[in-house]
Length: 454
Ligand SMILES: Nc1ncnc2c1ncn2[C@@H]1O[C@H](COP(=O)(O)OP(=O)(O)OP(=O)(O)O)[C@@H](O)[C@H]1O
Image 1 (cartoon, rainbow, N blue to C red):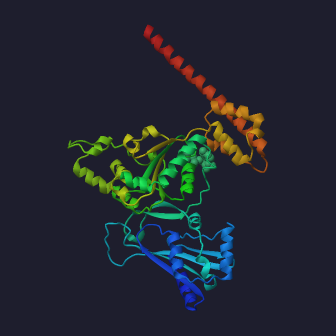
Image 2 (image 1 turned 30 degrees about the horizontal axis):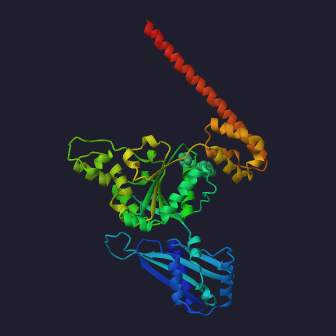
Image 3 (image 1 turned 120 degrees about the horizontal axis):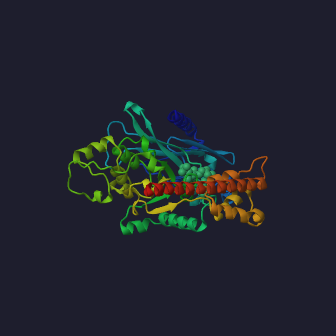
């Protein structure tokens, strides 16, 4: 359906170009990597003449004033129409697959992608002075998910589909300890600017983060903030939809650079604890040092085709396949870090372990400022009590945020009062539970003593 739409647009644009009133520029390239808009502008610049129309001058002036800019990033098979100062730009991107069977050792090479922009010839001087951050800032990023499908009648297969990534979370809205936040931001910057460093030390340009902590502490929000900060795409990998290691490998090689690959709740996804099945002992491999599945050779081969195993996931993270292209971040989230196989999260695979914890005082201040526009000074009456309660009670930021949501009938004061009541209730409940637990222990100890005297 989308493809038909693009084809029709192509036809319309061809007709317009035919009447010589529109300029149409196409760039084609091979390979799966994202096409950088800045390259596009260089090519456009090479193509166009120097004359500068009135409209183009206005366009440049508007860019200078940093007004709403036209979008210059286009997804596969997508068409974007920008209207700018009454002029229209059509951007589109499509992929052509070769006819017949093409085999490539470098997956994706067989595809050919086209990028095209069409615009009125009055606008042809717009190419000059387009600053490169302009292209980067307006890149429409994508959220990919893997879905099982029966496409092309080839049986159940999982493939990536995507939508525009529009999560609004940023590090400014993420309520965590400010020192921890700064460390994470510095780490991301070092990674993003670290191409030369990774090359120098001979490591694949990738980094693994493990986000762990109770539900509602902001693990998913952190991922969105990271993606927005780095301006990367997000691949949300649903392991339960992946049949076997081969399929996982295929999915991985289809990911592009400048992306975050996420496996949420990895402890719940599939059994990756590497159960031992060692009927026929064999020579130890280096993998086994990672505490992983010890299986007979034939069984291992069978598993490649039939199952998703710990070894498949380890390969996915740091094996051969992670060498195909760089600038990828891999994130696992879990509510239960202890349930994970140590091999999966050892440093070097998951380079940074980040604990997302219950709402602390600093996090509350940020939430209060974001949700209610109030500062610590304006909060002075309740602040002391809230601070005290947050130290005594475990309340996740999601719950705190829920209490701070303003509605028509609830102003800032009512929201804060509501939060205090909820915190007090939680504290009372925690005290009761503690007392009950103590009573239970005493009772069982009493029973043991009686049994002992008998
Ligand atoms: N640290 C935080 N800062 C700002 N908002 C937060 C934070 N934690 C949670 N929230 C709010 O709570 C909602 C739920 O949080 P989120 O989904 O990120 O938690 P999670 O840790 O991923 O939970 P789960 O483990 O259940 O997936 C978010 O949409 C956000 O509005």
